[in-house]
Image (cartoon, rainbow, N blue to C red):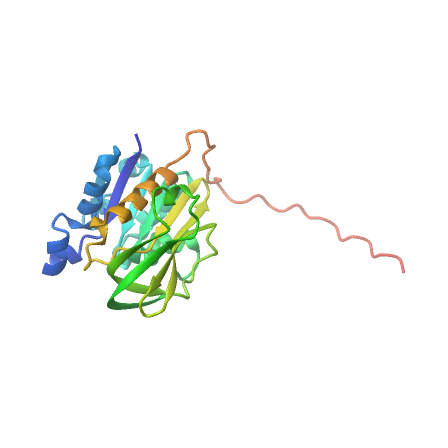
Length: 248
């Protein structure tokens, strides 16, 4: 059984009535409810819990960590960020949703600014499947639509994705690489764009199917050899004498 931890900063739902109506159990609760029929072992964690709910024991018992953050990125402790990144390198899957593109964890794993253009305009988003053979796209038609979403547009400052699965188009004409995969160490990473807090995106069946597909894809392969971070300082480079100059 795949062990999934769903992390949410859990801020908007406590402060904004509109968000609380859409997600009365929090965004993490809605994602957990959407994944429950698929037979995963599920737990949730939030920012204000001790160690943000991501203790050594929780991380050790997590195969895939799903992350949703927005306005509280800088409140996440750097020591927890490092622990999460180390677990990804060791084989834990990581799924970054929507504004988690700017989370400390995702930025550290990408090594870039992860900035983008954006606009909240209640626009339709059409997500095109550009890699239909990928396991994360399993069961998804050639495109699907979200009637209202926040616009994210290029340029998205990330490394070139190893696999591009979804591309979004918005009514304003913008496009965006909205489903990207990466590997770091032994861990698999999936970034999936939709999920603004004022829209019922995480109640959409296709969105939840994609997240569930992402969990299966990102889960550690029991046959793989885990990445082990080298201990101690790097060995000194051997001094190589200068070569003799070529004869004229």
